[in-house]
Amino acid sequence: MRAALLLKPQKITMGTIAGPLPSPDEVVIHPDRIGICGTDISFYLGHRIVPYPFVLGHEVIGRITAVGEGVANISVGQRVIVEPNYPCGTCRLCLAGHGAVCAMKKSMGVNVPGCLSEFVVAPAEFVWPLPDSISDQDAATIEPLAVSMHALLKSGVRPGDTVCVLGCGVVGLLLIHAAVAAGVRVIAHDRLASKLEMARRLGAEIPETDEDAATLWQRREVVAVFECAGASATVELALNAAPRGSQVILLGLSSSPASFLPMRIVREGINIVSSMIYDHPADFKNVIKMVAKGALSPACVVTNTYSFEAVGEALQLASTGEAGKIHIRMA
Image: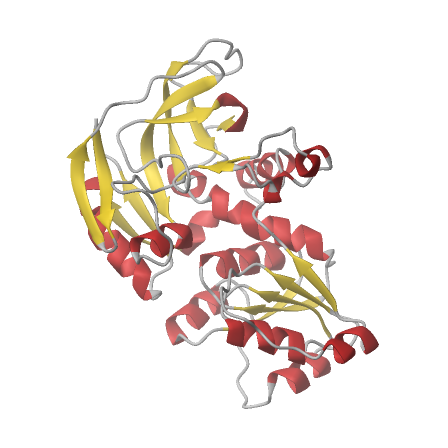
């Protein structure tokens, strides 16, 4: 089968590899549309290393082409999406309901082959049939929406609350979309004017003054700060400027140290919450239901669509940080 192969950092080529066969409890999917994610960019730029050549990609909608032994609830021809992180289900963390941080978790396009190919295999347990009411564009953007929704639910914010989103990448924008739909007021910050304009269109307020973050957030009674940029500077801003009694939810994956004053965190009751991907199976089930009934439309953040042959161009644009969600449409 044809596949987009990462040969080394910033080097993608179209090649031919063996097609997958389903093992028991697995299915094979022919992708129709694939989303480019920040994880793909980290591998593409060489910030994370994989055994080359490697197939990236994990945000996928497609149709079932084969099912393995023991698969009873999915049939050939069905239109599906994949929940692309597969916790082991048997370790202490999984048994306690923390599969998102399972140390033995397998992840499509991370430590098992991805979906930027003509066919991809996935465990049937993590494959979700879709109703016809969900468009392909929305379906291919459900996975990052689940990441954002998980963080919003963990925060416990309620209609009428005011929150801050630091970093208007795809996860930040989808968090804004979900929060506004839930009746939550959002203040958005980003270094790029184009991203702030996208946030504004989704219903966020963009600060118009030079007022410092701590003063603004205190005055607006911000109850939660979502750090979505994944940079030490924004982590420090969130921790040092969060209002008394609020919480800081860390979604971004900063790999640099960040400094904060523990005494302030304790004395002012600042809660630090981590939010890693989503919980299986509740989060995907919930998000699919909300998109199906029209409460959320994650395709609102899609700005560019490329052909399969132009995967390299898509990854290059995504690496600039200037686009919204980028999709690959398979022929």
